[in-house]
Image 1 (cartoon, rainbow, N blue to C red):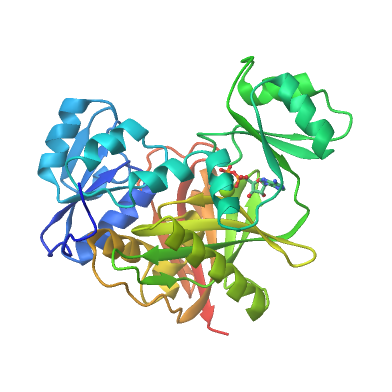
Image 2: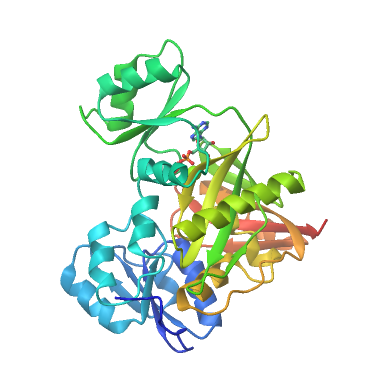
Length: 366
Ligand SMILES: Nc1ncnc2c1ncn2[C@@H]1O[C@H](COP(=O)(O)OP(=O)(O)O)[C@@H](O)[C@H]1O
Ligand SMILES: [Mg+2]
């Protein structure tokens, strides 16, 4: 379905959301503030997003009958995770506007395509190559030198499906650790970046080509999971500008209509390399909920609905801390902290490594 001319969705319209996790939940809450209904489509019963809306479809992503009914019940559709099967997006786009479009999904759901795309528009990434088995991995590591990082090309998150390979490591063991023992798989080998800082930029872009960018933020991981985001990043204005230019270029070149989060490395000699992208709200943008005029979730819904974008200006500085597993037990004391805003995701069980909520700690803007 041609999307470029479609009008903004009027309040009262229904936005479809593929995926039912916390990002969908916070987006649905923001959509409600703008007068929209959100219809969540997810295989999961009682997920974080379905708890906040009465419109739910619980079905598989390849249940064509359920998708047909879903498409008939909504005015536009988006997603809160990028692993929506390509066939699902293609099915929906024939019936209803899908924002961001399937081309954006295609790029962002495969690490090789993502890096090919960046390089095709002169946006630098680390050195990388494809590997499909232990032999090709051995060839690439000989060529690149070690250390390297081996990653599954698709479906990785929070460091899952990644193996760090350093000098002296057995290549076949590394391959099996990544592939789960499979002889062939789609994988990428990346040169190890000795970065000084990890930053991310979130940009929103509308159907009319206007865009708004949040200030770059600084991300700190623990056990491969985002632990804290410092907003703004403690980098020079010149570096921040360069990060923003990269974000704008990526959003324009993929003709984004929606939100795009870009994770970047800042190297010790102040180069910026793109690590990965997500065409949706991002954990490193949760601070915007309490420290910016327009949160990333409201901005996301504005872009998907084709409304004018809100101001991304921040009125406070913030440190976002993820509440992972048992961290959430501190909820009562967090509530007593001045300047702290607690957000919980409605998950019943606090398993290790599970994102249960986050807290934004605000301080005066500097
Ligand atoms: N090429 C690399 N060089 C150095 N560190 C890396 C590299 N790729 C990933 N990392 C580290 O691993 C983390 C997770 O990798 P990433 O590619 O972002 O995958 P995901 O977030 O999907 O698990 C990054 O945030 C970074 O800390
Ligand atoms: Mg990442």
